[in-house]
Length: 377
Image (cartoon, rainbow, N blue to C red; front, side, top):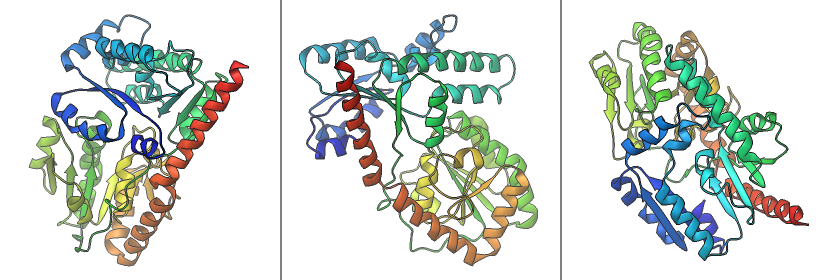
């Protein structure tokens, strides 16, 4: 997005947080596309304290976790020293830094409605932890509704997230632009895939990924092992916690941890699964798998975030038996696997390419500026 704005002739100032010096160093490439660039490194334990201090208040704890007084100070200095034509905010937790600004057009890209994710978490957590997640979801939903009033246009990454936003009935103008995928980088491989192999990609210290992998290994994999004794399930992603690493002891499971490049692992698999039952917005892992020409079997929850037709470009399942049925079909029918692989790749290149996404982003910017201009009259 920043590169697109830069190449369109805009002068872009980026202000953001980093959770470690390593993460900050990894971000430095963005400077080439910025007129100015601010990155504040925060320490996780300080952010957790900020989060905890809001537990007994009406303010969402997640707002505390993503708050930095240093970043706020620098943002305020920027607003005093420069004249901006537009402020674009990514995610509700970043909106707090500019919610007070009322003399510059502002676009808030929620991407997905975080409050609904917290409410979904509460259904998977034991009591009394579930109550904490539920309360956070309620507080964040109230904050999201309030934030809408501070911005000229609010957008999301999918139609169903926009539907959620519009149900808030805030009266705010809404829109959407999807995530894109670099399908020249994530591309099919010339190497042969392994016949009865399954892959999953995701950062493993993220609870929805952790939960779905554990569930897949418990409910789906044993049924597949009964049919295919040589089946393998490879879990690819950074920071696996102890319970995920322990899966290496199970028959057929490999947990890789951090890898330099996910592509060879996914490209050699017969099937990629994304059995997430807690999912909002677009799962980039699905787009990347489809772009690499690997058939994707997703939960119906996660499939909502992809502009694709279930059964034609992607398969979707809810129960363990449905996952087994779909995987069996692709294992046993090479023609069907090839058809779905090609159809998924084609759909990504037409509906989730970055030029299309950025055209819609540009349309949202124009709408935001028009709305702000009319509001002044």
